[in-house]
Amino acid sequence: MIENKAKEGLLLKVAKHREFGLIVFIILLSIIIQAINSSFLTFSNLNDLLTNTSILIILSIGMLMVLLTRGIDLSIAATLALSGMITAQVLKVFPDTHPIIAILLGIGIGIICGLILGILVSKIGILPIIASLGLMYVYRGLTFMVAKGEWVNAHQMPASFKAIATSKILGINTLIFIAIIIFLFFWYFMTYTITGRRIYAVGSNPESAIISGIKVDRILILVYCMMGGLAGLSGVLWVSQYASAQGNTASGYELTVIAACILGGVSINGGIGKITGVILGAILLGILNNALPLIHVSPFWQMAIEGGIILFAVIFNVIVNRRYEENQLLRRVI
Image (tube, rainbow, N blue to C red; front, side, top):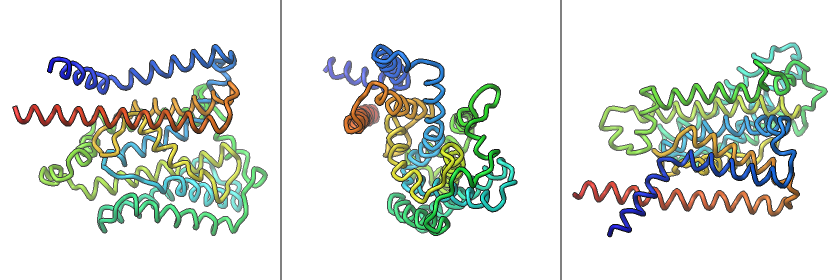
């Protein structure tokens, strides 16, 4: 009996300090990789790592809010591609368009895509996985229609737009700077605002949220609009970074985003997850994508290693959440 309580207490402590555990794991992993390849912890490589992970961080923040409400959005990569393609086409015709206008255009397209999904889920009652899966194909098809089967390459984009991904703000790469601003904004939003707490409440217990007067439909629409807006922003940043807009841009990337959230301790059952954990999960995936090629790991093994780590994280989450629920139930009985 005492041993069970001790184990249970240990699991709960680990769950509460999950972010610290991720930090320790990231540090140990970095030390091991640095020992194998001394170029890993150089400033230039770390800058490249963070730059390449910035879009993943932005999308993971949006997916966190969706998962907290017991939802899921499989259409984010298609939304990213659609916003990026439309923005690239506009820039192709109007090369004097200011980069900020291009960014706002991408965000607006993403918000519209998210609004459609939010209405399907909240008003019509379609399961998020079904609604987002259908829209994923719709948005991807629209991307190919807008592109007319062609790419928009670097020569067709203005230099000012391509400079978004290479320029710096306060000495920090613009992509990293944008990711930091978004992190700070949503960290405050989720931690200190009433709406942020309501998002957690909707995912923890939808029935209780309705009884307490929370407009669940509005929260769901808001969450999917924010996810869409971040996906639209990511589409513009993606096209700027790679100087190319294609119909199959970011195909399958939604799974990487979901993986980052799961690694960060977000529960797909809703109501559990922290934005700091999601950031660390995204950084961990970024380290793996950056470091495994450096230490000459086969591409096939890279996928297996990433998959194994994600599977371990899922199993860990299930065990911890199950013990936590059992502990809460026992307290109610007592």
